Structure formats: structure tokens, C-alpha cells
Length: 465
Image 1 (tube, one colour):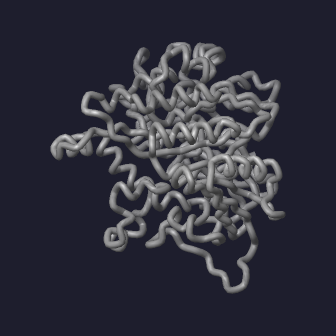
Image 2 (cartoon, one colour; image 1 turned 90 degrees about the vertical axis):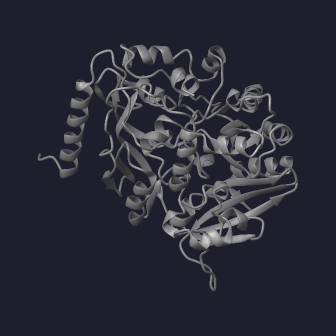
Image 3 (tube, one colour; image 1 turned 120 degrees about the vertical axis):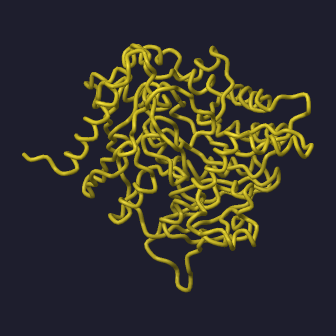
């Protein structure tokens, strides 16, 4: 049987990456040569050449009958969604920002408004080809007889410290053309939490199916849940909204009880303004908005400004010149058990004070699966809380010391939660490993990266700051 052009392309890419790996001297650290990142922590500065994985972006094949897709590891969700929607299909979980890659969402952690029923991106993976720290390309699955089953389940949340996903086969779900949104107001965190519990348990609200649910907290007394239902057509005399130009999605939430979006625009509703973070760049001011090219209203454009600020400390230098207080970056996503959400929000309003805040419930999709580096109680609903801004610190404090972030970490741990590791982390080693698979990780590291060619997980996410 002749190999398809997609198979031939993939085999060529694998041969090239294997050759690149072989050319890196023994004893030298291996890294990816990536010009961009969705991480909010400094990336390790490692000398020498990196692995060029830029060509691993694309969908190899889509099978509409089995509802699966075979995808290269560096494929962005923007490209993945563009390939699947013409078939009336979409990934089970689509993280909110266009340029997050499938491999990045699997080896890191992704979450979105379908996570209360579909879990995280790694939970819909059927098979992966992983380039390990030993230079091998291994095909791994969750099958009981797979000799590398431990890597399949240990790969999520390993952040490239065990290897890199080159090819991933994922499940897909049906996608209808439109999404009907209902914005539900609540005066307290307790009322909102009770509604989350009820809707996620039933999968319905007021008798209507709920396909998506997330929330926005504007203050201690202003909370909204947004429930979304896919539909095949629009009601009579109703038009879809457009939040890709002058209108701003999050500002519509308090003012509209009902809204309709195309499925494409729904999936990227948060990307245009990077949730609400575009306001830091003036992109929400009417005059600036009018002049800003529509094609550049994207999260990856704002990220370039952030990367420049990280590199040159532009905001810090301006604050010092103007005599303003220094600010500590507080950019985190955390998860706590649903019953602990009101307590965490009370703490957050009191101790941190950032607003708005994003809320998103999630449950593990398969109660029998165990993902040791990011383990949940499979019988519980958790709630993700996302907050992305900065807070003033006193003159005698070093913003890089992370005092606010440390308090958040301690509170989340107290509440039996955990946080995503895409941003700065300050855990000591015993605490970190008690949360993130400290029993299994050393075994995985020894088996799949015996020479330590890849930076370790703790070294990568805590010490490289």
C-alpha cells in the first residue's frame, strides 16, 4: 500500500527533526527553537542550536466518520479549527486563544467553556508520537498493553520536560453553525457557585441544553455566568453579533441577556481583546480602536508587546522615571473544588483586587483515567479562576519576589487546588512535588530522558524566572 502524501510529509519531517537532534552534542541541553510562546514566565536561556519544529504545523487528515483528526504537534488551534469546521466538526476542547498549539495545550494545560463536559485537551487525545529526551520517537496510547502507557498519561503538564509531541490524533465533536448565549447575573459568589453546580450537573438551564459555560466577575456584587447552546439556525429577525471590530465582547455581558454568534466567532470571542487585557495597550479606547487595523486585534499581537516589556522592562523603567510605585505581575489560572470557590473569591477580592476575573468550571472527562502530573478528584467539579494583570507593591518590596503570587499559591494549596504552570511559580520543591506528580515524575524522567537532555519540570517552571 502506497503511503499518502500526508504520511510522506510527516515521515520527512520526523527524519529532519531526528537529524537535528543527533547534531546536538552529547551533554548539551535540548530545547525548541521557537520565536514565540504563550508562556507568561521567562523561558530558559540555553546556548547552542535548538530544534526547529516550525514545520510541524498542519492537519494531516480528518476522518468525518470516526470524528478524529491527525494533527502535527505545532498546529495552532486557529489552523485546527479552520480545518475541522468545514466538516461540521471541532475539537472537544478549544482553548480561548488562537495561537495556542495543540502540542502546547496537551503538554501544558488548556481549559475552555466546554471543559465541564469535555475536560481538558489531553483528555481527547487517542495517540501521540513523542520525541523523547533520549532522541527516540515513540508512538504512545492509553491502551493497557501499550509499553509506553506511562508516558501517554504522564505527558500532560510536563511542559516539554519529557519530550515534544510531533503528531497527535484527537477526537472531534459535532459543531453547529451558531451559538445562543445567555448571560445570567448573580449578586454573590455563593449564588453563582450554586448555579454552576446545578447547570454542570444537569447539563441544562431552564430546560435548554448547555454546551458551554464560563463566567465573568466584575466585582464582589456583580457576577455573570454565560451559558452557550449550539443551534442550526437563528431566530427570525435576529442577527449575529460581531466582536472582532469596534464592539468589545466582555463589555456586552452586563448589557445583553441574550446574544448570538457564529460558532467560529464564539470560539475566538475572547481572542480579539485577549479577554479584557487589550485595554492595557489602549486598544479599547474609541479613537485607538478606530485606527487599529482589524486584522491586528488579536492576542498574539498584544503578546508581542508583552514580550518586549519582559525583555526590556519598559513598564518598570517608566514607573521609576515617573516616580510611580512598581507593580508585581499577577498572571495566573488556578483551579479549586467548586465548594471552595466563594472562599477563594473572598480572599482574592480582599488580598489582590484585580478585576474582571474569568470563571470556568471543569470536570475530568473519564473518571477512570489518572493523569499524575495534574491530578484531579475525578468525582468532583472544579472551577478555574483566571486573572491577568498587575498590582502595586510598596517601595521596599521587589516586584520579582512575587509576594502576592506566593500568597495566592498558599491559599490555593490550602483549598486543595492547584494552578497552571504557564506563568511564574514560586513553590519550594517539597510543596511543588506534592502537587505535581512527585512520585511518578522522577520515574518518567529516568526512563524517557535518562541523560537529562531536557530541562526538568521544576527547573523549567519555577527556577527559570
